[in-house]
Length: 289
Image (cartoon, rainbow, N blue to C red):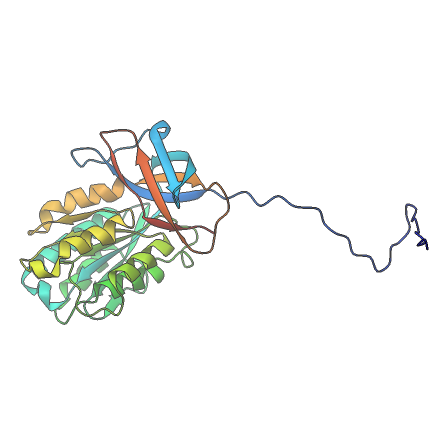
């Protein structure tokens, strides 16, 4: 038995029929801006040659569209001072170093928060001027335990978060501490991931103590390099302040494009150069929208 097939002419309304859309091409991945640290053999900031750069996301080659100095971009920063009892003997050096860094980063492009932390975290309600930061530092008392990991994560996901600062992709934390943590709820790995999710870069100046068991050098290196920043050790604190300021001002911005849209979590990132005179430190992982 044959079925009757009805043919509909142009202009006839097909009641009850649903239009099936054709296959659509997946959306093109959006460019991603990454801030990194690039230095020569003497530790001075350098701008890598674009043609000699290679990027990898989750181990897969990724196109690098551009590389440029980040100094002219708007900067939002937080200078975090460890006011736990372990820094009491060097509190004047810590305060002086923090004041110099805060003043140097505050300019037409840079504004910042002052953060004091021990087993609790105290942050200014809004960005402040150097004179206000100096007054707060003058009255700071050094006491209590140290929650370094908690404090860094709170600032990265709070006042420096992407959601609170959508128009300021360049955001930096500067930590002044001995690198020890004896009170945090978070682990070092959790703090690193919090920083990476927010796209914040961590720089650190440490007055290392003689307690080798706490391995503060490892903490300093991990917390900074995993975010694309740099850590420095200086028993006198003030000697390395110019180098730290220069490292922040010498940041570079890379624009990369993933091979395909891959969002939803952190993805590993590797930036390499064939220039033997340059070393690049980029975030170990980045969020992809």
